[in-house]
Image (tube, rainbow, N blue to C red):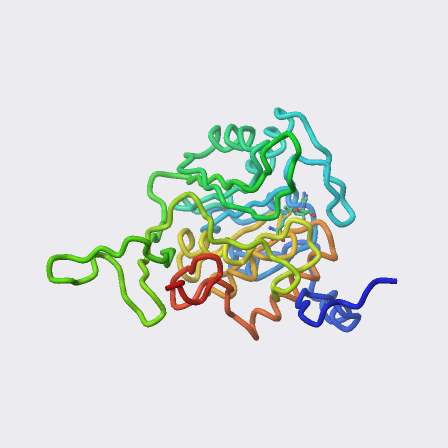
Length: 315
Ligand SMILES: C[S@@+](CC[C@H](N)C(=O)[O-])C[C@H]1O[C@@H](n2cnc3c(N)ncnc32)[C@H](O)[C@@H]1O
């Protein structure tokens, strides 16, 4: 018998009533364009294969493409089983969905693609053949397993690329509030480039390409679901705030439990997500309902990102 969940367990569980209410809200194809001909579908979760759905998107309509494709691993995703491919096959696979997605991007659009270190070189080649690669973000993922004769794997990667030379990027929106270790003062005794608050001394620093302030969702966090590779909302918040203007459209062809759509909604952007597995689609729809009631993002408050989800910097 399954043990009773801890009273502190806040993970999302779909009730029979949720399923009944949400199933009719889940389309399996994109709506036809209106009489004007060019209405961009938005604020939708669509159940289906992104390789087909991407091809029916209107051209030049998306501001930000966020893709978290199955990593090149032997891993079960709901009803699907991911099979590890050779490096070249993985590169071809990524090239196929990228080719289907790129016509839908606006000229100033950005692209972020997630992966682990093994798939990273194949991803780089697939992106580099089609886009201008601008950066490689590394984020610390604390849940790695210890290994007897190797380093514990504790990071994942995100490639950042743009379609053209003139892309949207707002560095001011993604500052990180860090505790100041060396609080230097000028001759008059004023803090040099840091702030003093009753809670401690801090500095709002420019975001770098190494992200150590994230927590992978776990059972006591309200954003947690059963999805095996769910990303933190805080991670998507950084990407969306930096690379999608307010009111813009975020496209996620591998939506999973809906993290990108949920964060887009919370931050005043539109979203469009595709996902093969109906159960994950329902989770995404439920999370979107909850986002309307609780629009906060753990670790992002007062317009800044806080170190490791701490509301206040340590003294
Ligand atoms: C790495 S997970 C994405 C997790 C997501 N970022 C989240 O936070 O929950 C990849 C997802 O892509 C879905 N998927 C795989 N192939 C797909 C395809 N061809 N079309 C749509 N979804 C697909 C899988 O079912 C899986 O849920």
